[in-house]
Image 1: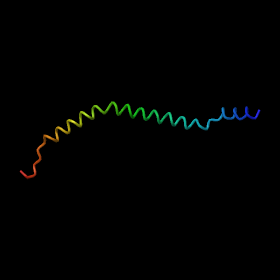
Image 2 (image 1 turned 120 degrees about the vertical axis):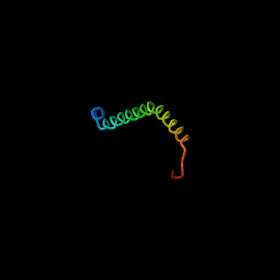
Image 3 (image 1 turned 180 degrees about the vertical axis):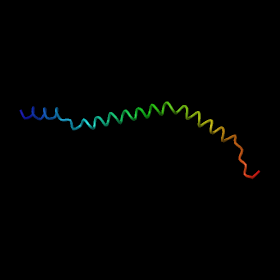
Image 4 (image 1 turned 90 degrees about the vertical axis):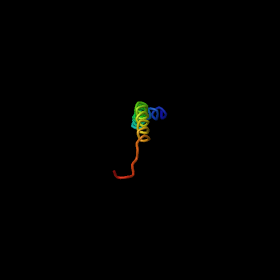
Length: 65
């Protein structure tokens, strides 16, 4: 009888529910971050190569004209 009461108490306990909620929310945020990174990375790579090409072709003048 005592084991049945312990099992019933364990089954009705919700003390770990908040932890499970936070784990699920954190996993969703990590997944969202990975999806955004995957989407934006190709555009950033293209833009950075354009900036690099522009910086390589710019002429730097050290005098006042």
